Every structure is written in C-alpha cells, then in structure tokens.
Image (cartoon, rainbow, N blue to C red; front, side, top):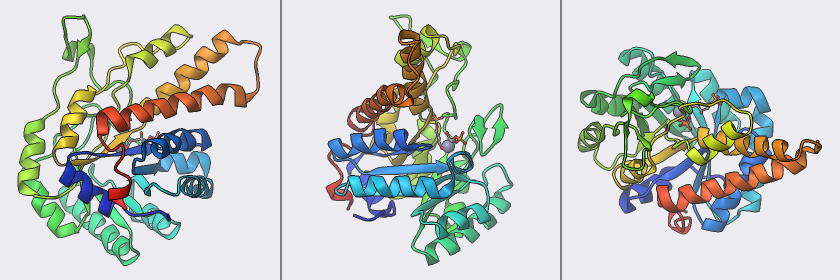
Length: 324
Ligand code: G3H
Ligand code: 13P
Ligand code: ZN
C-alpha cells in the first residue's frame, strides 16, 4: 500500500489502548531495521525525519528509502512524518516533497505565535491531504536545535484553545520526558531493591487533565527512549563514555499508551543500539574494515529493539490491518 496519514492509526490506537511507534530514520540500515521488525510483527509504523536528518542524508534519499520500505512491506501502513519542523517553509517543503504528516514545533515561541504558525501549516497541509502535529510545553534537552536546561510542562488550560484555533490533528505535550540519552540526573532518581536507578514518574496528572479537555484527541510523547542499560553498558564497555545515561521506564510508556497517547517518539534508543553494536564489533574484530560487516549486526539489533518496543511497550504488534 502507498504511504498513509496517521488518521486511522490514531483512531484505532486511541480506541484500543495502544500507541504507534514513531522512529527517527537517518540512513538505510535504520529504515530497514525498523521496517523489518514492523513487517514481521504486523505493526503500523511512523517513520520520522528531522531537520538534521534532511541535512545529513538529503530529503530525496530519505523519501526514496522510505518508499523502498513501503514496497518491501506492502502489508503494513507506513506514515512519513517531519519531526520538529521549525517553520512553515520546512513543513511546506516536506508536504510538497511527499510526506504524509508534519510536525510544526513552535513551542519555544509565545502562545500566540505558536497558534499563528501552526494554523498556517495546518491550512496548507490539510489542503494537500497531510496531517499536522503541534506542540505545547517544552521538553528539557535539545529540541529543534534549541537547548532547554529545564523544560516547562504543558498547561492543560491552554490545550483546547490551541487545538480549536489551529485545527491540528495531534498534540505533543510535555509531562516530564526529554530528548536524548540523559533524561534524568542520578540525584533525581531513587534506587529500587536491585540497586537500579528509578527516575521520577511522568506527570500522568497533566496527561489526564489534557485528555479530559480534549476527548478522543491523539496525544504525542516526544523524548520517550528508555535508554536500555544493556546498550549503555555495551557502549561503556567498548570504549565509550556515557555515564549516567537514564531514560523513561518502559512501564510508564505502556501506561501512557493505554491512555490518550497515540504516538511515542523513539530515536536515542536506536542510536544506542547501533553505536553499542558497532563499538563491540570493532573491539572484537579490530582487523575488519568492511562497513557491511559492522552495519549488519547493528541493523539486526535495531530490528530486535524495535520488535521489543512494538510487542512489549507500544502494544501495536498485530494491529497493521485494523489501521488500514
Ligand atoms: O527530537 C529529536 C530527534 O531525536 C532528532 O534528532 O535533530 O539530531 O536528528 P536530530
Ligand atoms: P528520544 O531522544 O527520547 O529518543 O526522543 C526522540 C524524539 O522525541 C524525536 O522527536
Ligand atoms: Zn522530539
């Protein structure tokens, strides 16, 4: 099937208590690892491209890679989404260039400016059959190339006005997640009985209040990598230095997916799986230099990581047909 919008996916995800995985893609191996897992698990998927990905790999290459995945996986619905579109022009370029969904992220501007720019994108996108994600609240970490030391939670009292005035199809909110591999400082965490650091809980109270004000409306969570300690250890064991990398506990993401959260963004976990695997490969095979040899296990580990997310975290395995 051709690329689709996320409309039906979100409708079914909301109704049936799961979330669609939105995975960032930057090269062929990442696209393949994600979509092979989705194909085998019969899962709908959102492949998303950031401004940085377009600068790195080139818009056309990324679109063609995703189109190749659609041909290779004819039975699963695939969305091609712009992640953190910084302005109208970037969104327009993606809408004109084959994307089926865009995010306009004006969340670091004033509420009025956010409404105005988002509305402009929605009008153009809807005229072209493309759906739009907006954002209210700011996540800590690097977002849209702007670094926020601390985030600001979404204010539930603003969401109805924002959605009504802009016409967005989904809304990203800030409830304590953040971008990157260092989401929480160790001093913010407590230790469980096994001595493992447990981060502070996400603000489910805000999520529930937002959902009460926006019934049946799909909510998006950014910064939702769980930063698997298996890969952090692999990176650190084989020459890396990523001390105190901590992510969002997967049980909390599963909980959010059962509520109104219909799209969960994952990028850092893919990066960790790829980098950890390649570091290990080189440590064990210092004589090798064929990129196919180290990219193959990296792609295989991305695939298994995505499979785990689909089955155990997002709950969208086996849902491809109902999302068509
Ligand atoms: O939210 C940001 C995504 O992880 C994309 O990151 O801008 O480095 O491609 P990037
Ligand atoms: P992570 O850094 O937690 O993977 O978040 C990715 C993201 O939100 C992309 O928009
Ligand atoms: Zn994001």
